[in-house]
Image 1 (cartoon, rainbow, N blue to C red):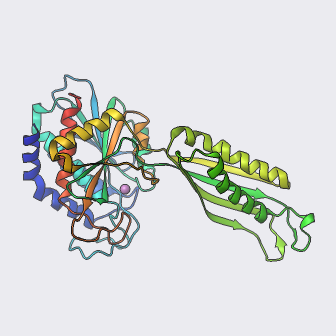
Image 2 (cartoon, rainbow, N blue to C red; image 1 turned 90 degrees about the vertical axis):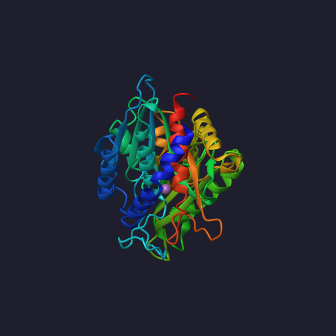
Image 3 (cartoon, protein in one colour; image 1 turned 180 degrees about the vertical axis):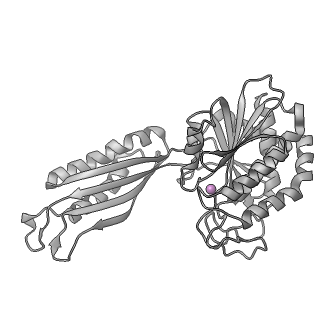
Length: 391
Ligand code: NI
């Protein structure tokens, strides 16, 4: 089976590079991936999959039927959107859409998803079960997965796999992570309501700017003294609005921030913990407050069984030197976690780094990938898919 998959992927490699370059030169922003989606739907249809467009707004779903005796349904998810970045590579196939760039490798993800569909569709009756391919829109704004799930793509799905490129892992190597892969990312908005007054007469006013500064300082100190240091919390206030004049005490200050955490229990407790600190400080100094804690993307928690499936498939395909166990999670966010609320799954990191040249990070205007990684991604996913029903 593995030899057959490798041979199929090898024969498809030139076409896959062409597909990736086409996608790279025609990037589209989150929620606007209409051309990309139509292109994806065309390729999937040509492979004989049942295709549905306009799922999760701009997403595409392709159903591939295997032997069908086993009721378990595997989903394979990739994302299609690009970023509002002006590309600064010198590639012949650089972005033709000014100010838009595939700087997070979603062009590679889409290509790997299509390549996997091509390979598995050619296996015919050798494919033991049914696979549902999900090509979502709008990952970068953390909306696409939610739209897909709302449109029912996870109905009957019993396991899900996904992939993200990673430039600090060399091409040809697959990064495997057990447990938390990315952080939960929530939005925080606090408004302090004090009372205005003359800058010279603080006792007649309630200084919202000073109270806001106390809140920021206390929150940062409280993380280090009350949160388990082995369960990280990062709280960043990135924006402050308030005040009218240098000699007028501010009656209102708005604090806007992001809150990142890795452990579900920590994440669950954060809104109450933050509100207590804000409420206590405001009460002490006579201010009122409004607090809006908006849940964003949950943490990606890779399932043990599904991660073992990826690891054993990657080891079989590439040997020990082709697999890297990732020991630390990232505090970035990834909306693959939304699917994981509905079925166990795992996302692997696909090494795309060049061995002999500088590798720019994701979201950098000079980000490039070693395209040989496409084959690594396709074989890993296709073989893991075939092993899913045996696992
Ligand atoms: Ni990404």
